[in-house]
Image 1 (cartoon, one colour):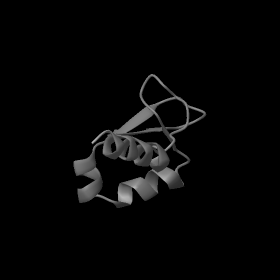
Image 2: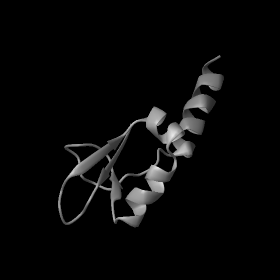
Image 3: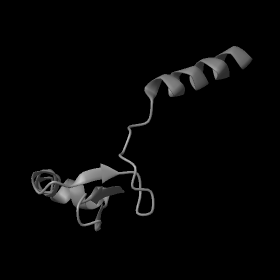
Length: 66
C-alpha cells in the first residue's frame, strides 16, 4: 500500500497494489497534481525506499552462521 499526501491540504490518498496494477496512470496523475509519497497516514515524513545494503548484510550474516 502506498500513501500520497498533498502538502498544502494535508489529505492523504491510499493506493493499493491491485489498484496500481489496474490503473498505472493514477500514479502519474497524483505526481502531476503535486502529491508526495509519505510513509503512512499518521506518519507524514517523506517516503524512503528500504535500503538494499541492509538486506545484503542480513543475508551475509545468515550465511556465516551456517
